[in-house]
Every structure is written in structure tokens, then in C-alpha cells.
Length: 446
Ligand code: GLA
Image (cartoon, rainbow, N blue to C red; front, side, top):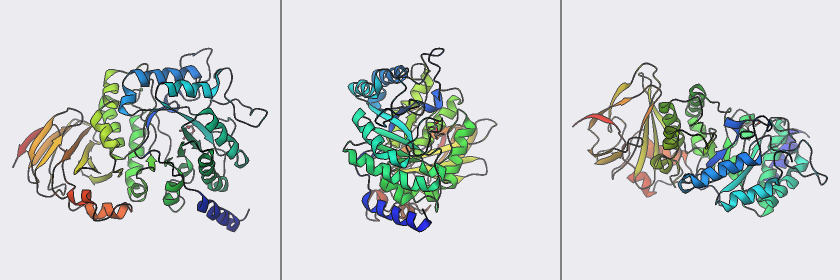
């Protein structure tokens, strides 16, 4: 097929595709197998940890019994390596029978019975990334129908073993096929990763029409280096990425690895804080059966979750990179609030950071702030109040705050309008925005 034919075909598909099933008005929350359990199929040696129905039932039990569901963590998502190497006689995907003897429909029922939702994984190529059967273009309809018939609620559609043309055709066609099943399913597209993650290769406007979320960048691994490289890439490219996000359409910097082996407590708080600022999906990949208290407390932090789930759905931005290697991130929130994160990328010792609301470009006004990780409330702040707090190496201080008052400079009001086409200058939150977060204040002077 020549490039012109592909363009025409894409235009035709675009005319007919819009995944508008009302899902994911806020970023999805839940659990997925991949980062922690990978492609462990050694059930004889490792029955508790291998990719099998038991693992997903265990995680559903934990989500429903340990307070996760009430906080919004609702999706239990199967990743790669669930399939049989062969399709069935009708050409349908089928789970590997020795590891999923009850089948996916029965697992879906188990998950639904606990008030949770089931996600599954497929790939627009000849094979999945781990070599299981792919969903080539001719298989898109049948696979969408199979997932719907099983009661699947979410599809992660990967892009290994496919070329650019197959991706360009396959991602919109799967969107259409999911729609056509009549079953509302969330649709997570890995397409951007496979074409570099940025315009002009990625058309984020179109992606927002056909997918609810999309992976932009490389896979997360169990290390702070990996978290940092993802944050760095997202921040360096925020002018392209940030406008793409909004209710029903989210950038996905990949899974939360909190509770695994690679992050210190400070680094775990940093991931939670930055994922909240980035309006990122809060999809954990950890072992919910063996989670220490600090990981549980961070992942279940209600204020961090509320910031992540803010109904306005505006993704935050990195505002400042100080010479001291402190970075300031900011996200506007509904109801005249905003959230700030102060991240230290230092590697020496806790750093005393001095600033004021005014320096962060907030207007005059009285502000109240809340420390997300200590719970402390600070009142009586105004734009000239100088504050100092201590940020641990690779740690954060995170604060949402609220108060009447206008946010100026950083071009914020302007910028938000620019970057977020759904909002207009007259939206009240834009003019009322203002609130500053400070936390763990060591000193305050007017
Ligand atoms: C790709 C994806 C990962 C995971 C693996 C499974 O690498 O980006 O998130 O799904 O495939 O093989």
C-alpha cells in the first residue's frame, strides 16, 4: 500500500472513529502484573507468583479487602503471557489452559463480584512483546468481540512486531471495534512509544479521540534512575505532552513501582507526588500480598490521590529547575486550589529550600496549605511570606493549597488556556486559581 492510500484510509477511519464511551474522566487506578511479575510462567516452581488466574484472584482479593477499592484502585489488569500459543478453532485468542483453567470469563466474574474491573493485554502485530499471538489487522474485530464476550473492561494494546502502517491502521480500527461491541471498555494504546512519543510522528489530537490513555515512553523498571529518566523526558517534552491530557485522555508514564525493591521511602513518595502532578494513571505493579506499611501508606495517601484524580483533569508541569537541583512542579486543581511539588535531585543531604509564593508567581492573597505526606496544615500565608523547608535527597515536599486569589505569571492562566483547548479564559477556576503549598515549613517570616 502506498503512502497516499494509507493517508486516505486513515482519513476514512478517523471520520468514523471516536471512542466516546464516557470512561476514564479521571486517570485510571488499579493494578497490573507486568513490572513486578513479568512473564513468569513457571507455575510448577513458583505457583504463587506465576502469571495465572490465582495471581489475579489474589490481587483482586487484596484490592477489595485492604481498602484499595474504596480509594479508587479498581482495575485488575492482565499483561503479556496470559495466552495460549495457539488460537482456538474459531480463530479466537484463548488463555493458556494450564494457567487459566477457569477461563477469562470466569476470572472476570470473580473480579466483578468484588466490585472491581478486569483489564487484558493484546498487541497489534504478529506477536506480543513476549512472543504470544498478536492481533494482526484481520483479527481486530474478532479479538474485540472475544474480550467483550468475556466481560473485559480495559484493553492494553501493545505494539511489538508491527510496522508503522499496521500501527496507523490498527490502533484506530481497534478503537472502532471496541466501540462496536457495545461494551464500554477503556482503551490503552502503546502506539506513541513505537514512533518516538512526540509530534509530528504522534498526532496527540487524534490519539485523544481514539484512546483513553497511551504510553509515551520506555518501560519503567524497578529503580529510581528509571523513574527519574521518565520524569525528565516528560518534563523536557511537556509542551507537547501536557496539552494532550484531559478527562478521558491521559498520558501514561507507566506503572507505579512503589512497594517493590528499587525505591527508598523518599523516592516512593517522589513517584507518588510526581504521578499525581502529571495526572498519570495510578496503576500499581507490586505484590499487594506483601507490602510494607510505608509503601501502603504512600499509595493510599488520600490527598495525593485526590490531586491525581482532580476532576478538572489538567496535567501539571515542571515550573522551575533551580541551580541547586531542586525542581518545582505545579498543577492547577479545581475549586481554587493547586498543588506544588518540590523535588530534590541532590544526592548529598537534606537541602534547605527558601522561597515565597510571590517568587513562585502567586498573587497576593491569604493562602492555606496542607502537607501531603505529614498532614500538617499551614494557614496565614501570603505572597510575601518567606518559607524554608527541608527536602531529602531524591525526596519531595508536596502541598496542595487553596485560597481565593489570582494566579499570575509563569503565564499560568494564559498558558493553561493555550495548552488546554477545552478551557476558555472565562472559566472561573482560571481566574480564581491561587493557593500555594508549603509543607514542613521550618520557618516563616513576613
Ligand atoms: C512492552 C510494554 C510493557 C509490557 C511488555 C510485555 O514492553 O511496554 O509495558 O506490556 O511489553 O511484554
